[in-house]
Image 1 (cartoon, rainbow, N blue to C red):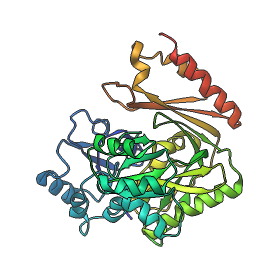
Image 2: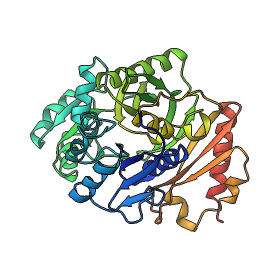
Image 3: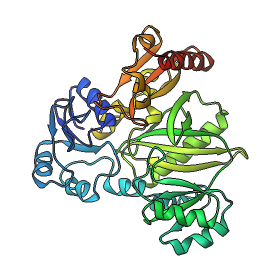
Length: 378
């Protein structure tokens, strides 16, 4: 067990690292952040910001010598970096877990090996693979790069073999999957916390997600699903965590089809945008939970305190100048979280707000009202 005042290391300095810093420092830990960006949102709140690349030997050596444990805020840290720390200090999640989650081919293959369902897909290593893939799937389908795709990036919809070939070239002719589009009733996600000692597990209430242009727009909790569906989705997520002997916070995104099937879309080896509602609406946030799992502490309670809707704030909102935050802050049951990013850009996540209420209908109504108010010129 790693106790407060120890130094915890974070690889990556974005908003997830920033919220980890807040949770860790609140609990009495010190935090070092490794990120090359001088304006890193997490680095601004860390006890120390090592402004260096993820493979820079001197920075890695210093972290290994001073940090009691290391975690990551995103999955594209080089595997060699995680392996460098392993064996000397705890690395949670492990390099193996991160390697599975960051590659769509490896990830979906692993999911199926556990007897869990995904959307039908074909592996695309070259353009020559597309003909059989297009013949074997119901078109249109989605072509996705195996790595580095997020928020709708690294993918395109294709309706024919010719479009698939053009899309493959546009995506850099790199390894991809071609995945069948599912007739969706809804998208949901499950956040799991799993410890190292005996694999003690805590799960959060299932979130229901709405994406716009490939970017998460809102998450509502409770989700509009039956208790049976919620239990099945949670069991699937825990099954994946157990199969990887995972330690940390793991988020599993799941398609709920119109036919009632639950199909795993992808997993993130870290806290997730869809879990931001936990900052205000559960007894333990996903970031405090990340600290707890990293330090070998028992998981905190995931009890839901309030119905909640989380709404992402994108850089598009700055198109007419700085948003009039007073319009949001005058609502007593709305909580604003800004990420400390200097430059707003269309599609860039700049923050989010959580709307809490006695029931989900009231939370949805408040979230929509605030969205409309913020959209008006200041």
